[in-house]
Length: 192
Image 1 (cartoon, rainbow, N blue to C red):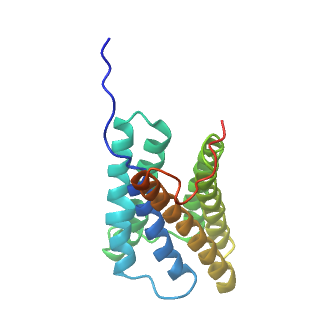
Image 2: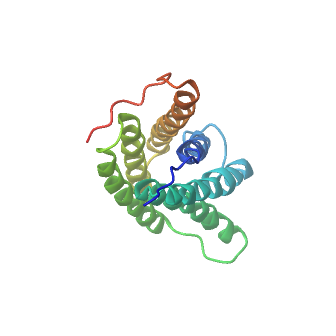
């Protein structure tokens, strides 16, 4: 049997950067730095949404079930989050109330918690990304369900900024480590 070697590039940095940069920008809003605006929605559609779905399809080609599931799912999360906002603005659907948004965010938190368990077989950097993301989703859900104070929501935004920058670090570390052929930015050991 003649097996060919996969020489395609690593799509994970694209997905991680699409997720991380969009997460930082949204959570700067959540932390109170600026209002929800077209920049956040555009990033949610293009880089957080479409780029992650593309990265997930590229991971599928490489046979990476975990990364395919993560990138396609979170890409579609970003597209669905933008749709929740835009559909309401266009009058195509009633606005989701706080309880509905809490349920939406809690479901994403549960999904992310299970994905975090999967990262226990991967490097520490990915464990931090998924761990902080699970916490972020649950904090956002609690904030909506309890109609939390602005201070709680701002705290949640800062946690989201940490989550986003952890994904940016992980993506850029993979790029630089591959380019230099050595560890420039450590990801932590793979735990199997």
